[in-house]
Length: 89
Image 1: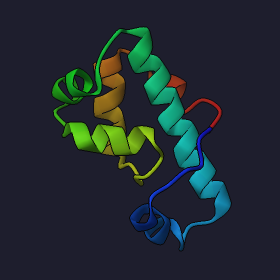
Image 2 (image 1 turned 60 degrees about the horizontal axis):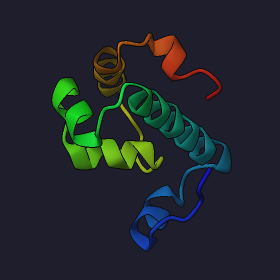
Image 3 (image 1 turned 90 degrees about the horizontal axis):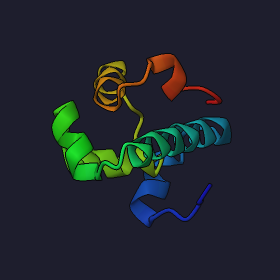
Image 4 (image 1 turned 45 degrees about the vertical axis):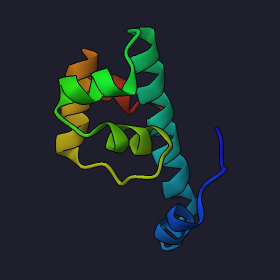
């Protein structure tokens, strides 16, 4: 898990607990792993999930507090259950 974050992201995450930050990063790792397993780029996943590619990148890096709606879109685009996507988070 890579903890190198930009200054802006550090400021945004400053109010979150370490546990929350780690959870976001694990979720991002799960999404990245599933995406790569399918051979999808971030751009292709974003297109399938009807989300912006920059947002997908931020989610994968654990920089976003992802909404349930976005998680459902991502899980459908990856053809995995929401349960599998959040496993270990």
